[in-house]
Length: 257
Image (cartoon, rainbow, N blue to C red):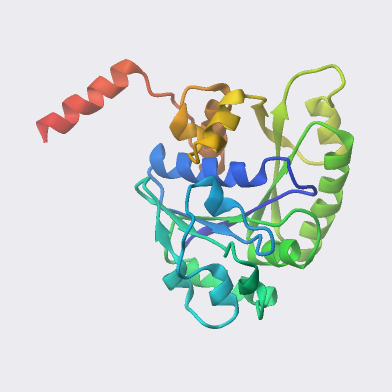
């Protein structure tokens, strides 16, 4: 039975889609979990662009119009164990989409993976609310500033009304500047634990330009380590970085089989 985790934010531009791509990749590559990541941001879909997927014959849009089944929209990514359900990049594919069906559609994935990550639309519109209803748990992504934190407060209240379990806040693009909110200030304002701090890291921008998750592009970068650690927290495992010696040990074990 898959855990269905919605990744939500009150504002756009805080790194929600980047988080979905990297958490999914980390869970599949490092922790060997079966993962499906779903682009639930129908009107402004970006997840497939982040992964370099420019053409998908069947998308979530066709599923929500009743023209296709959810399993037909699942695509293998080049990371073993990671699959992607993209939303359409075409404006014409918005016609007839019924986001109220999202919950029933997502529930059909419960036997298809260990973890399903839903990339929600930002804010509190119909798409975001439908994603929250489809989720068993939600992780909020925010930056260390008042506006994005205040929006998390609203999203948290709605999650509680829906009966969706909040996992906490991932604080993204943290630069440790004096003008940023501290972790304790964010926690007090939102009344939620900050379970991960992802630092400002130029490797993330480089990886976006290359259309590959930063945990693949540079696994030892500061942001990558934070994503690996967060992925471990989500499944109750401690992140142990791979070293040169552990890679040699893996090669040796493989050679003995």
